Length: 320
Image 1 (tube, rainbow, N blue to C red):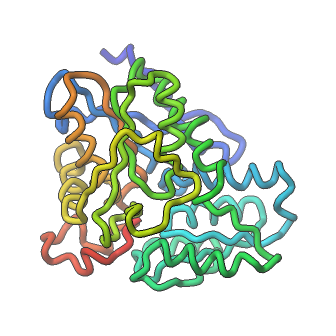
Image 2 (cartoon, one colour):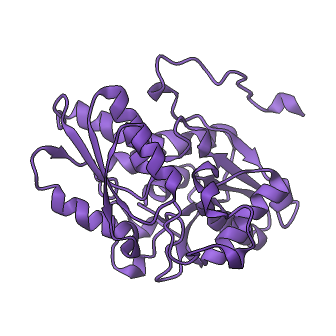
Image 3 (cartoon, rainbow, N blue to C red):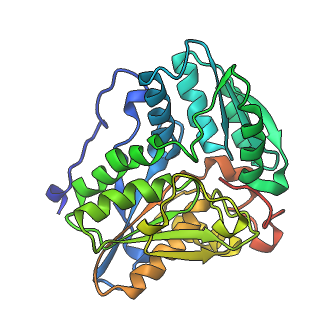
């Protein structure tokens, strides 16, 4: 059986840490599949250098800006984030010599704050109750200062392009056909980039967005009904938008760990819940979803150890 897999034991050889971004494992999760004719696969983005899918877009946005002459040597980078994009930018900016200032909700987990400080980023806090939308508002106000260059992941075409050229191409290298791709609706980059590439390969591929209940701050996802639609989102690419609750996201995060041994961040639980739902509706084929990050940045929340009813601020924490 093993000969059919393209194992790369050492993961490749690279000139520096930035070059090692991408080429993450695609792992089948057979215990989650509701029927044997449907195979569910997860792309483990926590294997990127800073532990999340956002390494892909941070690299793409900075290198695109450098190529276009938009950043001067030593210029400060400014970006709104709920954590992972900021951490990815912090690593890349430190490696490339750019100071970084991030705007982040004040209710994210402590691990994310610590990682940003470790990489040398300066943090400006926005009102936690406004979630990542509040961080965007503050950053846009600050961006008028010419000292800053803001990649602006919500409106930067390098974001979906990183997935079009990278993530989706990697999926297609491993699978002949994809019946459905399920992604969280955050900046929109994951869904737009993967959706375009996968539909080019097979127009019948379903592209499914996972969206939080309106008013709930689900783990790096956003409800379009809350009023902010990132400029890079093209709703025509989406076949379906399905809502998920905070509680279900945590339940499925634990199921990933308990049933498949996958230690994932909470947004992955939300996405997995919908991936299994879609799998149950199909007669056969491959269902693919992204696990945006692993669980290390969320240990302090008690998500993996406490009874769900004892998790503090369950409906108000920005998890990812």
